[in-house]
Figure 1 (cartoon, helix red, strand yellow):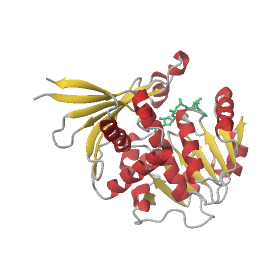
Figure 2 (figure 1 turned 180 degrees about the horizontal axis):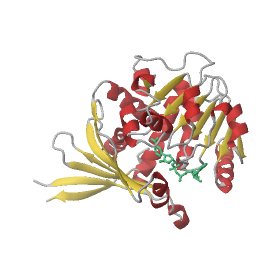
Figure 3 (figure 1 turned 135 degrees about the vertical axis):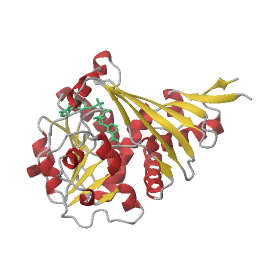
Figure 4 (figure 1 turned 60 degrees about the vertical axis):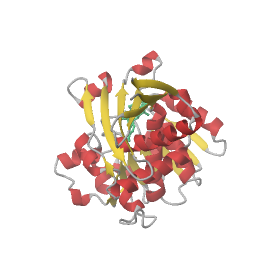
Length: 339
Ligand SMILES: NC(=O)c1ccc[n+]([C@@H]2O[C@H](COP(=O)([O-])OP(=O)(O)OC[C@H]3O[C@@H](n4cnc5c(N)ncnc54)[C@H](O)[C@@H]3O)[C@@H](O)[C@H]2O)c1
């Protein structure tokens, strides 16, 4: 018996709607809900890090393996294999490169190998968007994005979908030319929004209803005194905000607490390591709020800290949607996997 495998490159994925942020938000919400319903397998990330410290990782890079199985209407297993080359920009290459392998959950055989680079950026934007929808004030007017990279762009896209009330977006990056470029690009794309590149995040954060950090910082760039009442502070990567930002928050919300503790790079995970945060201090995972088991934002006064680590099932959900469409529309290259 022969077995075929479908190969989907970046262009195929584009044709299959990987860029559709509304669809990504739907997939990611379903993945969170299915997680709460126990209909997933989501073992921790396996991190293959070059060098010996987190600082080394930001120079020499890493490749992470993120396996998973998602049930429900997706019913698919697989793995996300994500390389991070922090110095790739010097060669004109993206920092993150992602390959997703999908496996039939019954036979366990691979059925698809897809470029997952856009999947990863979209699903992280979608996670951020879901957090903003559940945890930010409803009429949010100002947003600060720290980190003018691939993820900063999808955070913006999702933010403008879930919070169309946003009028001003401040952009901060350690490399000024990057925040300026991002602002310029965004002005052309969203002419009704005011984009302001800033040299220092303080004033911007003080005015913002939502601050999202998607940087490579491993020393805090955001301080608690800057957080205004009713704001949402989103720590989407490593040690980007101070311990005091977490202490100041009325609620701590996460995407997946066990994975966050295992990955041990974000502010709240370091606090857990240091015995400063206990499991019971975590108000909710996003899925619990989506299922109605826990509350999201309850008033316009509370400060909420959110941290996302990301799990492979999010990428598997988005890639499965594209794969099913590829089968219907005959997109991609069929490879004879087993003859
Ligand atoms: N939570 C998740 O699910 C998830 C998913 C994907 C990526 N990430 C994380 O998001 C971060 C950004 O990813 P990306 O693909 O956009 O990377 P990128 O390299 O495209 O962009 C990162 C940007 O951060 C800037 N930066 C670096 N250090 C900074 C600092 N100290 N202060 C301000 N800006 C700084 C860089 O100049 C760059 O413009 C990474 O740390 C990545 O690991 C998180």
